[in-house]
Length: 388
Image (cartoon, rainbow, N blue to C red):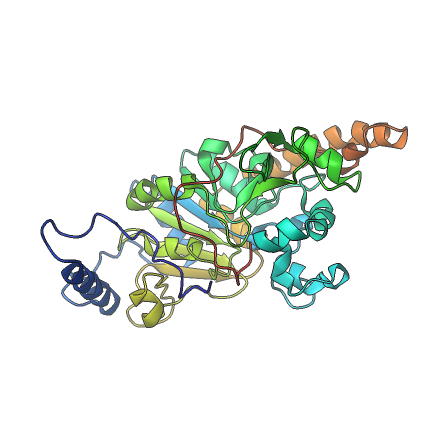
């Protein structure tokens, strides 16, 4: 299913006026979308930034008006940890799947293909499973936002659990595309749950995980193409994106729906900062009319709230931290936390070398905190031509 074919995120089944016809409701929705997209019949939104720059964002963050920050993050914040992104030519994950003889690269995350051929995914999972990888500066910048009392929520597309390793708790996270933290038997009459350590033991023994109770395949609770997003995603975005004071978007192409549409959910005056290698999420009238318009405007004469810092995500976070007066604190947090991870990994490596648990070779970590909610009643699914 393409982005344009997906149901508009946030569509309200109760939106039809009492006693009105379905046709009237549809026309009213179309009129509202058109008016919002073209700016018809609306007051100009308030401009709260004194400058459309990183410095302007920093000054806003230091003001009394900025109390709740939401972060939206993608694969770009984890590349510095050694995890490839999905679509970079030559180095992205999809460019290096030839050895699995897939009918098409995305098949490795397609639920229909997985049910018939789980072996390629579990071979790849050895590289994707949380292990000795250390969170990046971006992850710890979000930890610092939390410690400063500013972080309302982190919405992540990533399945590497590095947000948890960096110290964010499950209640502070929305893992939009699921997590390796838990796994379930695929048989609908069983659905027995397993934890990450059980899955890792099977995978690092080159086995396809099979349920102890019924021998069906056990799948990690990450969202494959053709599966529903977690119910937590839909339940929290309704409240979070109405009260957010600043949206920080890092390391994502904003191509995957419905995740990408979240940037259009914030109030009209809320500033939006993009830290990424390239600009993305700019306005597209057709997609806006379909309910997927991101509406980012960095360069036009009408730009008033969107700021793009282009380059390496870690460098962007360090630059913002310096403007906030947090740079030394952030660098010290990264140094301290990485040293703690190394200290945990060292004895496990020694145990592995002397014949210990083979799963310990990956070192830390199973993440901290409990499971993320998985599965959900919502019918919204990830588009089947997009990255996890």
